[in-house]
Length: 223
Image (tube, rainbow, N blue to C red; front, side, top):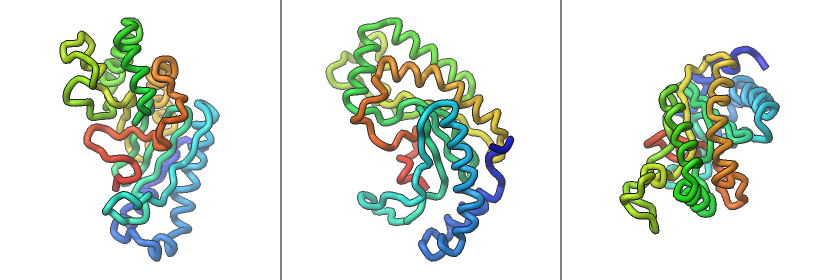
């Protein structure tokens, strides 16, 4: 693992892909993808797995079955491992982690913990405050009103309205590995909260853990 996981060539590749998002162009530039995208992502995945647990590099092909956008390839690259996440593209890096798109069982468990265990709610609020103070953005958006079955005047309604328990920080593409790891380490208290209170190992959880920042789309739909 090099001290700087990514080079500007990664952004060059994705700028070209954005202009020619088709199989013929991708195959013509496959060598660049393997060298500038796939190889550094796999090396970074090995480092992430060593520190946080099993993971994977997210597929480059998009799932176009249920979207009118039929572009065959994602125009960035991403990985997830042990609750942490990273994407790399033209706009740089998004680094963080937590629990994105929890299952119904996970949401129910988290909201019950927030309601019935003040120490759990206080710990979650403390970690969210620390992350936002450090420049992270929380995955969102939250519900516009109280979730079904909860009063609108609940004293911890802001926490109950959350639909995701994840946070990301933006970094330059050529950031050193130390900065990436520092962002991953910063979200570890939030990851541990989800494991303890939201049962983050729930097998019903979706197989797409990427936590986009407010307003972003799901990773397989994102440009």
